[in-house]
Length: 197
Image (cartoon, rainbow, N blue to C red):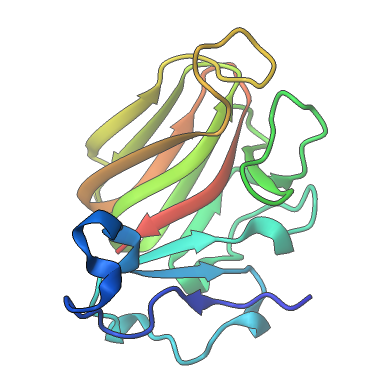
């Protein structure tokens, strides 16, 4: 099966299009979204970041990663480098994936994962499942804190948590150069990691 980058919308949206009727309005209809794999040969070569004018969101397809593969520069061409990240296919049912089989986990240092962007972004999100309170922090170029968002408590599957597994954790602020996910003394998984330019 061949996977490749695709644009959800490859033409400029027009207000008269029926999909923009007030009752059908969905913000994802008007933004470019690129779903990408980690393999270099499976990318539409016609996509150039410098020429994109609409807000562009990139959602990483983790399915091409091998289980227990250290993830660092596999998505560099898409503008993000990971630190302390491992691809896994969870065998523990407490950590289900959101889509597909593969997720990212903070490792070898438990409970921490960092993503650095080659160009500043304005929004970062991921579906998270954590054994502890999880903090998503965004930083500027000088490592000054721009903002934080928090998963208040554990949200493992088959637990008595009031928060469901694979909760969307997101942060939106201008000029994000890096983000960290931190679950103090805990384990967590990320799926459908997405960022918007």
